[in-house]
Length: 470
Image (cartoon, rainbow, N blue to C red):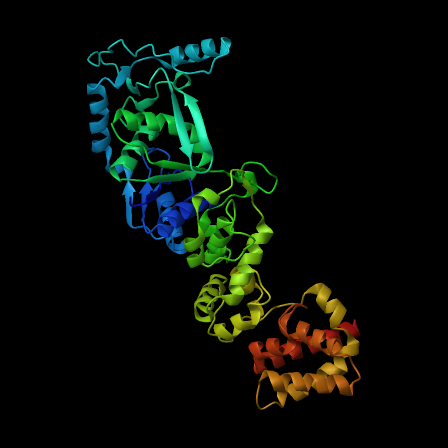
């Protein structure tokens, strides 16, 4: 049997990490078994669906490298097929028209709850043969079996049983004729020969209904695997209060796709104590049976740790290009400063995201108007005016502006003035960067450049003199 999985997001909201993890697990299962992975856009809710959300889905999948073998398929382009199946079910007496009003449905539910039963449709129109010729716009309901049970042999959750008596006759077509989710997903999975449906466990209660529709159509249902949800850091279901965002925001914040995927694969799946996985290792090792039944909680620090790992080990050319884009997004002219490749090599050990790296690199591409107040107060004091002035002269005399000569010059001057290296390096750092945080002092000056470093030293010395005169 050829393994065929699918990712079927609804474009009624942005693709977030819960959806990405579902896509990843489906993609890995297909790739592990040499099968196919299909992308399907479930956009039948035309009022809530948006082209922008579709665009985020497609961009997100591309950014993450979750390539699909077929698709994207759009449900709105398959309405004729859905109508055909609905008519087939009506013709075979496996579906029926229902004209019960909202008020009638409310009464049914209230009466059921009063009896201590599960609120559901009571089948009033099941055998009434509702006429559609009198201006009535009925819904169409599926005739769910009245007896027996549906046993879902879930690859993650194990065997889960549902009594048919607790499942009502669900609506498969709205009054305007548009199909509903539980019907369209069955027809799509059937037509697309989906062998394994891997999705969130919030869909588990839909599964017996869908299995009954498969059976009514004379088809064998796919295998199901329902992934436990992702919880917030507070252990509660993810929501807007947890800052759930579009997957593309992770890109914009400077996370690498391989870091995010590595992070998500470990939310519910493991292989021994291994934490770092290449994409090929994920493909080789992933087994849906190893996914935990319990929900997993977000750990932002773990994601940052993984991202920093990949920043350190990723290809320099690729990361330099990405860093350049982040620098330009800050409005910086990357032609007026060091080579981005040199900057990346220096900063990659220090930063956890590309956005952080870009923000901490402003001083290498643009001048600053003022010093960090706390840093200047602590380090740009009159007592360092004499050694800084002397250092400025020696740095100006360097014919080669490289790390070795810069470092040697600073060390020699510190020795002559009987200062610990930090006592001259920190004032120098504040002078040329505006703050007390930067790469090593020789790397910092090398990247800032000789002319710009000297100009900033002049500004710092003027600042110290004004401070001494105040």
